[in-house]
Image (cartoon, rainbow, N blue to C red; front, side):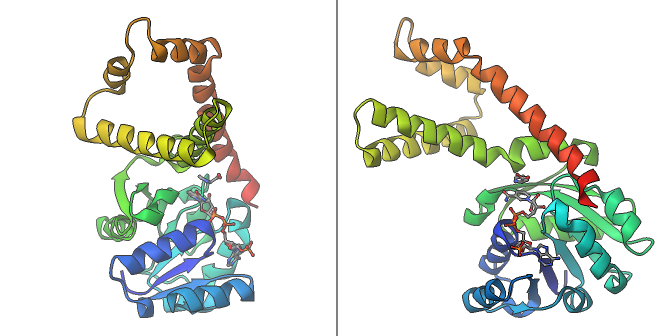
Length: 268
Ligand SMILES: NC(=O)C1=CN([C@@H]2O[C@H](COP(=O)(O)OP(=O)(O)OC[C@H]3O[C@@H](n4cnc5c(N)ncnc54)[C@H](OP(=O)(O)O)[C@@H]3O)[C@@H](O)[C@H]2O)C=CC1
Ligand SMILES: O=C(O)[C@@H]1CCC=N1
């Protein structure tokens, strides 16, 4: 993997940076780039990593990880392209940006890998899906997998599924937090102190997620076990169905996938 350069250490870039350090990678093997000097100073103080200009970082690294917003990708790639050399691996974490997009802007034959991670990587429970570009070797794919495995689980998917991955696991944590917020609000409406409601909801979420993972049971079976005939859960689920919440989730994720698909065209 050699030296790893992270271009754009915002939410996701910093998450990956911290995961690599927690997994035992030394700060000396990592460089980051940032546009704002105050942010650069903050990263050096917090992690002890070098913050370089984009061109310098590209020259210093064997593995280049692009973590800027899709809208900033065109400018970044134009800046680093002259400094990408044979043998380098370029890993993009950006929603919507295809490997074709990057390959056509980097030197001919560049090894590109498209990745969709998510923020639970911050607590080493990330979910990342990786897809090789046309010139990516098995060794290069292994480099990307190792990078992402430092802070969670990794699966390989065909690139045509990456917009769907973005809609499901990339954006997924936000939907869960949204549901958590709504349940806490419900607790408050029902007269609970907010702290009590938060504790109940968070442990319920954690317990339910652990049950799905550890029992291997289908979620429908687990839901039915909670739903006593004529009981409270049935009364609540009836309301969710009446309000078409399941359909709304599906439509929402279709919108996210469509937006992911659009983002590459807005990138330049
Ligand atoms: N947040 C998430 O949950 C996930 C994000 N992603 C992807 O990760 C990427 C980054 O998202 P996120 O971290 O949320 O966004 P942020 O805005 O938090 O981070 C992007 C960072 O890149 C910096 N930046 C922009 N252009 C350049 C440049 N030319 N050179 C150096 N640094 C630059 C920005 O600086 P400045 O502040 O000055 O603009 C910012 O700090 C996106 O492509 C997104 O699709 C993927 C999965 C999940
Ligand atoms: O909202 C976004 O565009 C990014 C990609 C996946 C999660 N956050």
